[in-house]
Image (tube, rainbow, N blue to C red; front, side, top):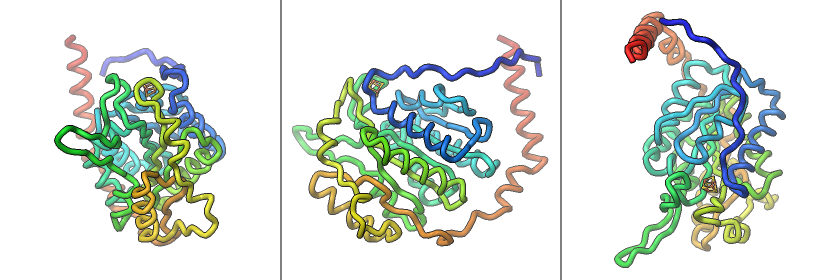
Length: 290
Ligand code: SF4
């Protein structure tokens, strides 16, 4: 391979519009990483395409910008191949719930230990405001119901962590982000955190969500370890035109088997490493030809 000059990476300044909900998400993630004393070199943020996907440019951790809708396969591979890392996938609802939704279903099924933060603003912000799958919409001929990924996750038997925050409720969002990261770091499974993160430019939903979020954390009698009850509550709240927020479900400690060691040893086999190096050398030749 040809030699290259290495440079120290410096985090970028966010490119988001003033008032975008994603500032709250980034700030909560930074606070959670600080609380967990996670050094930058042990953290990898993998991001999808869209305004939200630029979050990985803004932090001093390792980063990876995946193809559209493909952040979960990359994060799954990384979490399996190096379980000592804190792996965080992040993206928007357009990226994760449309082109990427098939991967989300299987991430819940596989329950590999990493965190996925989805910034839900009911819109494709980067491509100028088209409707995303989370927005209810009425056409002249028919109506489309919004996709609720929390309900979808709760309907899958192996799901181990589901939470929803709001970028306008900072303290709770820091708590939820910290809990999600801890769940994954303790190898308790896939930690799914959706954040209602309004797009002030194309679909300003702050005024609506301020009054339409139902905070389960405020109810002392709510039991977040009961998946069936969590799903029933989510559907009930949905009927009222609201969304539940807070720690909605976390499987009790020990409820899940840790994924088998052979998966890691296979991924680290000498044959795979050699093949990987051959592929990377092929890219280097292709670059040299240009
Ligand atoms: Fe945020 Fe919307 Fe601006 Fe994108 S277009 S940065 S989602 S406010």
